[in-house]
Image 1: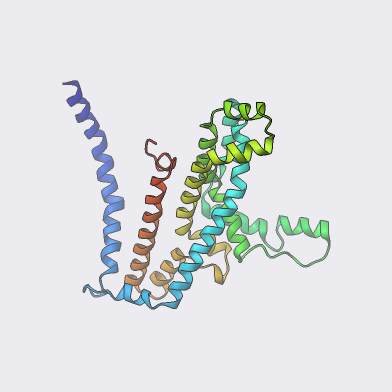
Image 2: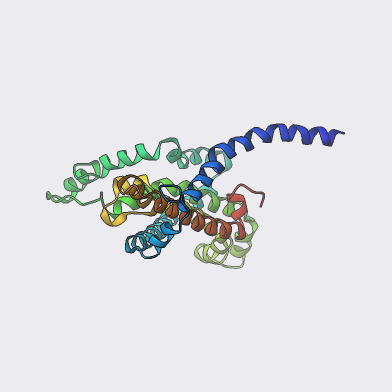
Length: 282
């Protein structure tokens, strides 16, 4: 009797969330999918996908998206692993305070942060002014409207997504393993490369895949801080939607990007630690 009552209560709480998801996610998603197979006058067609198959622009932007996503993932990993390792070595109370600073990128809109970076990284920004004072000369270092600006903006946004999976793997390691290795005569570097790093690889893989998946659909940062050669798939969707008004092609690109993301999400769920990143018990 209690189990039935608990099931009814669960359904009562889940039903509004389910209806909400159907209204704001599945219905628009179905609209995009159907639009990719529909002409502007409402007839069924494969023309959108056929155009992408022969489009040089689409091929270049697809490769560009994968390249930028891979670069952003690698750069984010290089910054995030030392940070996660440092947090793992801290006492729980101090770690909790420091993790607040890791979460700071979430507290500001990505649009606001991109404009802030444009001010900081501009020709007369804080960084170029400091470099002029140190190195002398009037030639500014170009940090905006190129790949460098895109990497800075994307890395700043993705660090929390990389830090927390790695931190989870590091905290799950037994503290007795390094102690045992130290008693056997291993140095700090050998302990790290033979024990700590291999055992943290599930977190590294989960963080890399999660960062890569999110990078595929990035729009604002490449638009504001990138150059002509930094167009990504989301920017191409915007181009077909607003500039050429070719909605079937734009919807087809969105569907292909969705399928690519789903493929990597499936891969993420299959690696150790990946399910916990996706919000499942793992």
